[in-house]
Length: 529
Image (cartoon, rainbow, N blue to C red; front, side):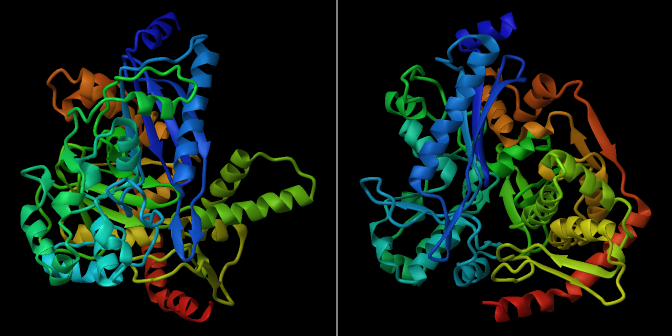
């Protein structure tokens, strides 16, 4: 305790702040890169005028409240006021659209990754580049705004992501980490920068030229892990800590996306390693040892924070429908007067799913709260369907909803399997894995490969960006891989589950039913308005 207290007072720490879909979290690490304090803030996206968004006020007040809770935690644990840290990093959910004018005014409400409104732009750019551009990517949002003839386009001076915006507020530097930038525009893994050939193709599109837009001029500069991305300004320090206790001048690492910080937090940034993050959304990342042979609309190619190519399968919805069903049981428990915590309720219901039939007994669910690009579903319509003679019981019901949370992910991972992409290690993290053996064993069945959990994986992306901040000031010339292996994960405990053959067969049978039933989901979108 005295060592940690001294490191906090002397600024020998690193701070990571990550904006997730439902929670903003801050983690402070000591000189050993172990978490020593944390704070958080709950928030939720809004659906306004058909657009999933957060307001600038949501962002700022959430940031300040999260930091205030971290500061309180430091005071409670160590009896000192947090006034300095050794380095800071900011991370957030990737992609989306934040466009600003020359005076740094937001031109239209923040369009998050969750929006599926750029189909025409994504399709045209994917064909132009010979490279998959998903709807949620920033360049797709920009081009769709151009195609739509939106009035604000001519005023754009800056375009960035949520992580880039917060970093900009705190440092005055308009920059992104390469992993985050790879969700804005394709990256050349050799130059660790935006792909010049594709930049030229985009800028030469007739409607882009007519709009007077040049991506190079309005997108943030790209930096790799370990590079300095500026320092906390006096204005930024006051913004983060309105009390005035926090000192300015703290170095800040390149802002990164939640995909990159998830890779760092699970030590899966080397080739042939991967990780799967399963929470509000679910995505799997596999670091490639060679390029994919073809471009697929179901597969993003992004990069690690060091700029290496990664195949990413991203699904917009994972646990939202699961959470809704668990809440139904919470309501019932309350109605009967039973007292049970949400944690215990999740554990009981998830564990019950292990007793279900391997193929869910003829039940079928779609957890789509929003549209899904992989299955070409434009809007969300959560559905639960069963045959009259299906084995409808609690175990099968819960197993079905758990399978549904990862079924669309499996469709994308099956493409990588056909491409013969090698995966030596797959690490899991996120809320789906909290109940022992359940989400982990089902994910191993869905992917037909071992899935490992680290004892530190629950710290998540806020810890990952704290590690990147620490690497910037403590890396000592090491590669990021060596820094993580030597300074962070040496001797860490890993719990691995191999895929069960019967579970794999059962999940494959469910996946076939899932594919065949997509017409039901499409009909629901068309007919339930």
